[in-house]
Image 1 (spheres, one colour):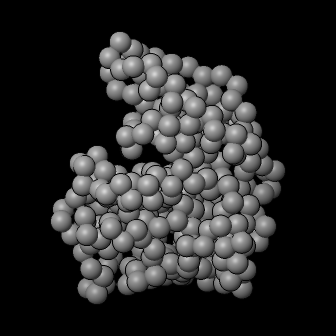
Image 2: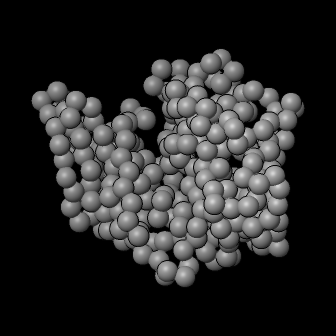
Length: 286
């Protein structure tokens, strides 16, 4: 398995940014049920415009997160760039017959989300200087949390499908799970976990531009019941960084999956919807 991901800072602390970038880059491997083995750094840095100590802290944070994941850094590449960027090219492994596909769900499956939403809205607030120090710490902690434990839990239980929630937002990636299938989804909006401050910022118009692009991208696939508040619709379209896993699991195994997730520290994981036979390739949020 091979994947690559890198991006600009979402927090001010360079060490934390390094950890977040690595956690995010490893998620694609975890979402397939794989185990990352090696990685190569991808670095863009404004040489001569930013102190090299900043890059040193970014790389130290990234290396610490790789060690936590059991990943070996084997090299990398850097370029002079006007804006700092960091991430990884990752190589992992999984048995070909055990790969968890994003469109492998089946009608009757329940949908489990392992991390709260709202990160894109909150990082926008952080960049705008609107977030409290306590909120910054909580957001940073979630961003830097690996999806390794969640992946181990789902492989232990046995699931039908999975995707990680990143830049296309919850509904964008949920839509990916319906591509090339003949089924649809129902999302229980009242059960979707989100960081509570995201509501306040969304209601005050603090949100990333990517949220609007995500809405435009999936608007023809998604239907909202009138009872779903606008702020929650925004949160469901909010682009995430280092988001959680959205897992399709047989109804008979859902509670066991939640227990396995909780044992491994994913105590905020919950059932947020179900896979349905119809309407095909549509998402109803109620």
